[in-house]
Image 1: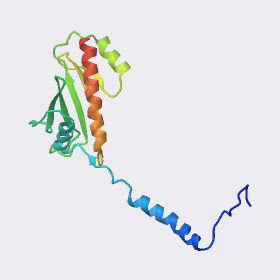
Image 2 (image 1 turned 90 degrees about the vertical axis):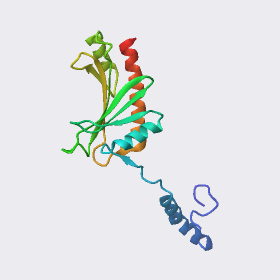
Image 3 (image 1 turned 180 degrees about the horizontal axis):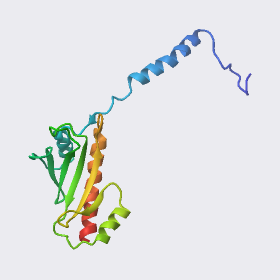
Image 4 (image 1 turned 45 degrees about the horizontal axis):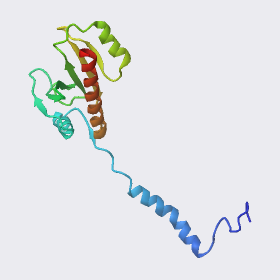
Length: 173
């Protein structure tokens, strides 16, 4: 008897064969039922990002640019924004990063203090004045190497949508 137990710690005999096989069988079942690796999404194909955005109910247009990679134009709750593909090869393909971008050309009076307060108190996206003096908001997403899971791209889009709305409130009150 061990520590108040009346049964032995190890059972020998016919039951031992079953117990001996149970461990490997459970391990094998766990390995074969492991989830499939998540689909990785990169920035080299704008249509994949377009499909993810459309899957979230956004209308998205694929646009071509003469001197840069293709980009996406979309709207969320009346706010127009772009998804730019950056850090591309010389052929403007095989991009490594993407950038969400929006600006307000009707808010030139926004103070630098208000823009600095945004940057001081918010994470994930940065605000500044563009060359025309418009307050803009940008958020980068690094998809280098083999990319990131599709679900993470979707969550980045959700984060961007929330930040756009918050920035609009911040700028326009």
